[in-house]
Image (cartoon, rainbow, N blue to C red; front, side):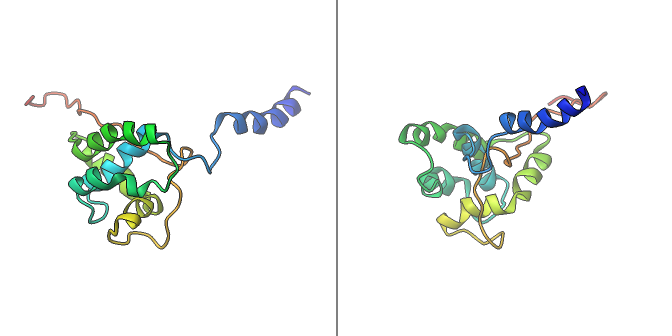
Length: 139
């Protein structure tokens, strides 16, 4: 009986935990993602261009306050330099339909057949970090 109840309740609980697929990414994550798209060379949009024109890529999905607060996160993503930057960039650039959603409104080079919503559920961002290499030389 408990097993049956668990199988019935599990899908209901999962629906409560995961955000819906049509919910735009939280403004801080969206800002970092846009900065990383430029910083990592996912398209031909430069870090300077994304910083200046990021608002054009938002499609009216964010409030004015969120767009303003997003600037610092765009700047962060556009200037990040980590020892694991290869992993950070690989993950950001691999989300090609989301990259397309950022670069298309800015006239950037096409990277995917079509753009998709940069949504909270599907956006994955690797944390930047310093690698702990035993016996390595510190800079």
